[in-house]
Length: 167
Image (cartoon, rainbow, N blue to C red; front, side, top):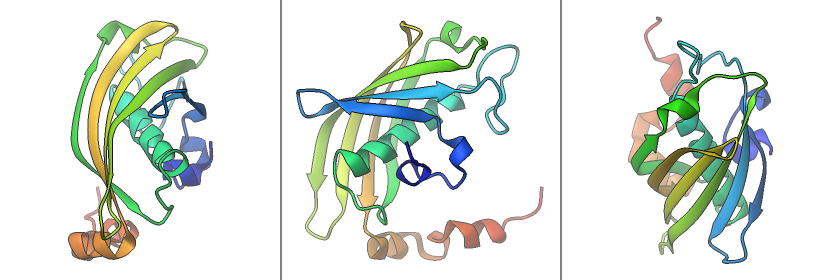
């Protein structure tokens, strides 16, 4: 899976390795590969960082918005709501790196007159054939003009980051 489709700027940060559509037309399976080490989502006490689960979902929804729902690449995605639950034992950090299988069902895809698309997804995740977690996400894809109007001076992530205070 390309970095462009997951909205990552560093190809090595892409966790997704593949996807497929189900016959029902609304569900998809996404395969992710969790590394044993990651510079941002570092394990703690021999457990994966739970944010790794959220980032895997974020990458998966970005991918599916483009390849399954034909959202143009220049549209910007924003989450309206996110609710998740994780099985703590499934976060145990093991070697070799872990494969995660997400089943994502889009329960709503509504295209608006001015170009925005509203989506809702339910996600179940398995790790080594054991339950990992579940999530529900409502998100929206805005065309560039609408996103810029809504975000104002924060629409350009690089410019906003450049104004941040040093650590």
